[in-house]
Length: 147
Length: 159
Image (spheres, each protein chain N blue to C red):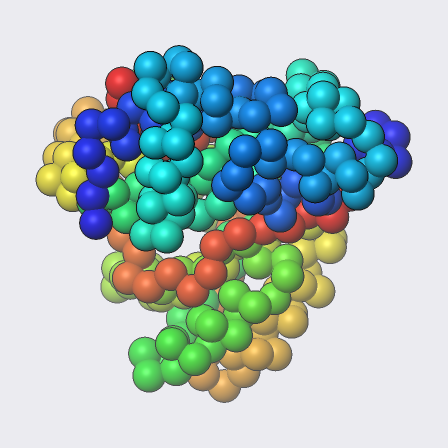
């Protein structure tokens, strides 16, 4: 990663505007061509420094739902339960966390009914109580990681 | 607010990332067989309606050295949640801040704020900054560190 990559990583986290040739402005600022910017982004993706470049869709606004949920799983059951939970395509992320509630996952679906249905299927399949934490209020979303 | 079949096609074509070209929207349009102006207009509308938050680079936290992520959870007096949630979310190291339901007796926390840093040690002073904001309106808090990523596919509509 060189100084130009760092500049692009910082600048591109802020986002591009919706227009034809969205990289033109950044290219001018960075004194590169648009094609060089695009190649740099591709290289950052290939190196795994970026996980994605594109629109951040908000499923809630499409009538869908994004529910955080947690399970309390005994250590000797953890791998088995992980496999069950991860096998649900509706599970977008799953993290082990340091707490009695030690498995935290997000269920993302296109409707509220699908989310509720998925959570109850996870409860049945794992045999453990699912604690659902649907959001009541969102204060802010976005993260800037300076590099 | 809703998305029609064409919007949905655009979402499916771009949710894993946009084509990396000088004009990505032309490529999306070609792929879907619709005019480029339609792609841009529909995306403009989705942006206005908050369906698209922004179009940007999603950094890989781990690869960039941000290996610690702490989910700080707070039991905050109901009448202070609105005001304090807003203040917490304005801190630059907080990536999301939500009010969520309690599950008493197992879980008494109603505000969740995700904190990112390079190491766990760096998380502690950041959480203390939140503590100084919530002060006496907070009845308790904890930080749940991530031990392991078990799955990370991100949100995907099923095509």
